[in-house]
Amino acid sequence: MVRLRGWPDVPTAARGALDSHLEQMNALGLSIPHDALDTYSQAVDLIAKVDINDAASAEDLDTLVTRTAVGMHMHSQLVLKLLALAQASRSIALYGRALGPRDCPGARRTP
Image 1 (cartoon, rainbow, N blue to C red):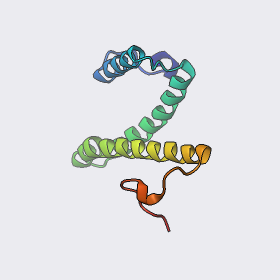
Image 2 (image 1 turned 120 degrees about the vertical axis):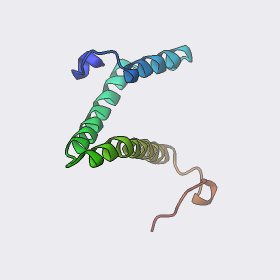
Image 3 (image 1 turned 90 degrees about the vertical axis):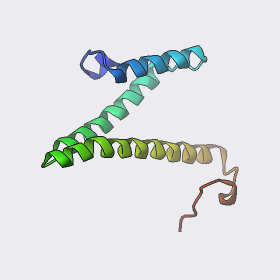
Image 4 (image 1 turned 45 degrees about the vertical axis):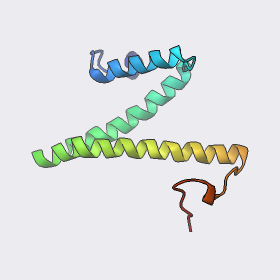
């Protein structure tokens, strides 16, 4: 993925964590096809570009630190929550509505 995305070929904690995670997935029999990993890496590369550009546009050091530390964490959590919503929505569209809103913890009714 590093070469495919044109990312610097440098050992980092993030790269090590990804390698470890992929090894764990393989050990559990959950290997991910190359095409799927390519799609995931494209999506997160676009997200990373937005996050880094946002942090880089900071007008002062305090704003840079806040955007980097807090903003990127919150953006990451936003992506995970959007992914969960997309997966739930696609599952409902594919398999039908198995549970009603009262049966889903934390579910909110939309107007």
